[in-house]
Image (cartoon, rainbow, N blue to C red; front, side, top):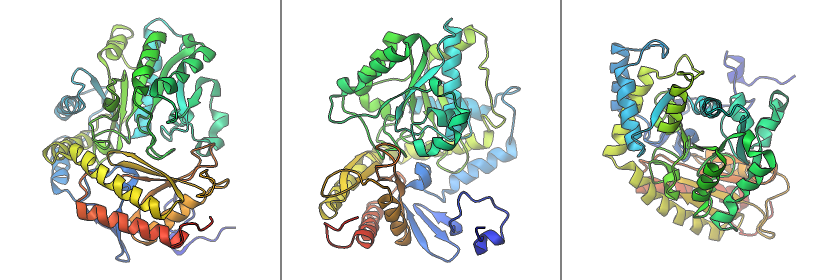
Length: 445
């Protein structure tokens, strides 16, 4: 029998794991403090959520004002002024003013909604045989059963595989940066022809990969070719921008960097920047028209969809993003941090690859002798723990190669990070590497 920690013994909380959690008591900007008074620089914005930093009084005031005016309505009965305003503002910010917003409470809900929407659209168009959603391996699209089935992360899916119809979730390989973007994307055609394109409803991908393969992005031309293949075969393109959207990659939507428009865009995390649960789906005019001209209703819904207080938070976050020009800031500061990480790589050759788009940055880790991933994971977790001890929060991961091998670290600090704080982040990260690997640049794992 596992003996509970002192915190667990006095707690009624079902904790995520058996580890001991420090208790966070306050936060300001990119910093958090625990109950013992220790300060942490949040180099991953939680899970790339707290994009504008914490402690913004104007967001709290906006939420309080909305709570006093209208706290809740059910989406099957009412709209609300804040929903109408937010949808108009968000679609303008994303450069998709003709799109429609379906607002929900979290990224998994948004991905689940996108999957169901793609299926319904194909049925409404008279193609009920289209039910498959093609995704990539690795990928991560959420924790609900549908979004997890769509994900290409073996470790997170394994326990629940018996609950999934695996035939509905074909996978294609992740982007291969040794190929041209066009050749890389052409592998989608191979998957569609193998599965039977008449059975496929949509292809879904993260423009810049997040938790499953830190900040991996394909070469130029990739998404333009993906768009062409989807159009050729009547397959909808779903862009999962839960992590990469809302300015994080130096553009309102990361897919814009490839001059491509998706049929359905999934957003989350940075929409309300951690101040309230908020996510959403942006549907093209063609997608919306297919549903309304068909059955006349999206056959799906959540109780807290379009929650007024969350939407008020989202409006305030949008105000800050635009006023402080944080999208441009992400591009500028991301370039500086990328240069700093590449300098770190010269001292620690366990960093095999440094990559990033805006303030979505990744370190691929492995054997400095073979330049390959270690056979067993663990380095990323140890570095993450050492960084945490040094007062820096990062996002470690493993399994990018084959669901087991492939350690990596993802960095995604708030878009409002100052230059001085960026320097502090690099300094703490260097201390973590030195603590785990020593000062010698050729230590073994």
